[in-house]
Image (tube, rainbow, N blue to C red; front, side):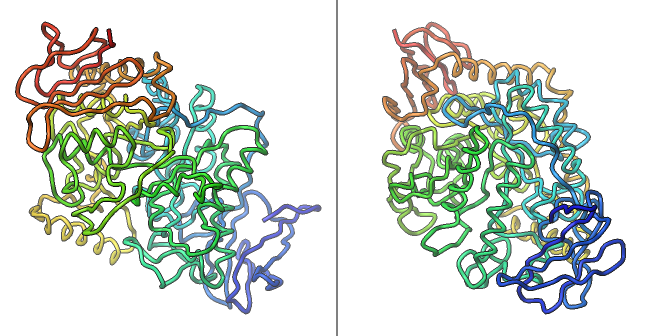
Amino acid sequence: MTATAGGSWTFAVWAPRARRVEVVVDGRRWSMTGPDGMGWYRAEVAGAGPGTDYAYSLDGGPARPDPRSRSQPRGVHGPSRVWVPPAARPPRPGRPLDGTSLIYELHVGTFSASGTFDGVVAHLDHLVDLGVSHLELMPVAAFDGDRGWGYDGVDLWAVHHAYGGADGLGRLVDACHERGLGVLLDVVYNHLGPSGNYLAEFGPYFTDRYTTPWGAAVNYDGPGSDEVRRFVVDNALAWLADHDLDGLRLDAVHAIYDASALHVLEELARAVEDLSARRGRPLALVAESDLNDPRVVGRWARGGYGVGAQWVDDLHHALHALLTGERTGYYGDFGTLEHLAKALRQGYVYDGQRSAYRQRRHGRRPEGIPASRFVTYAQTHDQVGNRALGERLVHLVGPARARVAAAVALLAPSIPMVFQGEEWAASSPFRYFSDHRDPDLARAVSEGRTQEFAAFGWEPAEVPDPQDPATFAASVLDWAEVAGPDHAAMLDWYRRLVALRRSRPELNGGSYEGVEATVSGGGDGGGDILRLRRAGLTVTVNLGREAVALPGAVLAASPPTVGGRLAPDGVAVTEDG
């Protein structure tokens, strides 16, 4: 859509399957010319412009929102509204995502009592004090209802209205930049949600040649896929340019299926690099992938896709299985200190050996991939929220072992990430919640959640109903508890670890060179003492039954050391003498 001289507005929509397309403005239908050679229709409407509500009708059918809608103030089934980006902001240098970074993942709806972008702004100083460099927002593209994780978005260009819409997001981004914080946004290009998803009526956006666990796969390599790819790449660039974001996190790229010679991830990475060059500041692209395939972040010249960084679950899985003792599902592939040590040495634990969980070989060695291309963590929205009750790690293992996990994750060579409330051992869980307005869909989601966890031995009555507003309410952070002694003590531990990382430039190089991670002791599975040595520091983890001697001067320890010895379930950071 574009403005034209004389107070008109040109509407454009890709609808290659339609014989006739009309744009509906203020109840009046305007015929659109087309299709052109690529299947686009256009119409110039006098008097339309920013703030105008409109929709499209295909072959005389019902009015549908614009696939490229920038605003859905009446929900995903209502008309679209013309929105234009604000005037260009003054140039600024930006903040790169590198070895010095600390990412903080948050969900806008549960981060504050108001559940809005403005509610996030109210707590930004807390994040600055913690030492955060980048916020990572869970998806904010428009989805049905008010409450949800955001991964069932259907209007990928519009900002969820219940959070404050595009203007609210703009206020948050400006407030972050004023404090020196970068903003990353989680975007979903592997599927769309079920309610309000009208894309298939407009064109071949989906394919049945592939399947995903969450819905129809997006058509990246079949007939008509050129415009689908353009839709996704343009969408990514619009989030970055029009909302002044600093980067994107690409959800579950292992469910993006593309057999083209130019994979859509590489196409997207090249487009983002071009935009970065034009804007004169760094723009990050981070992919979530469970493939353990270094091609995702590999350089173009070496056959990689060139994505800037990747979420790597292996360190989390190794920590979680080790500290909780859980071995169900993919945790069955982990559970020893050597798994954790390998994750600290190179990112991937599985780099070509057989995975019992997958019943096949998994992964490939990440040769030449620096630590600054891997994002690692002790907790995420997925690993907390996809439990039946949404328990955090501290709820499962207690404060002592939660401090162990924090030390390992925050002092690892890779880029660390913290999930909202983790830093103060928040008492609130983070559960899966939804707000589907279609009764049949709401019922199916509730029943499906119960059946899923019943298969793992949970009593159906114990599984929270995602549609129950109380499930959402229980997940909202209680900021008043931060001042409580136990919570304040955990927050102090996180702040000390982050400050230690920041105070030692040699810890922020984002490299695996010189990293030593060794296991000793006689525990089951090959040891119970882990020592991570890098840049003159040693992180010692004691999961044995006896206290162990520490090398060098103690910089941080939990629990406090006695006579230079670290107690069981303890962790210490020492400076080599």
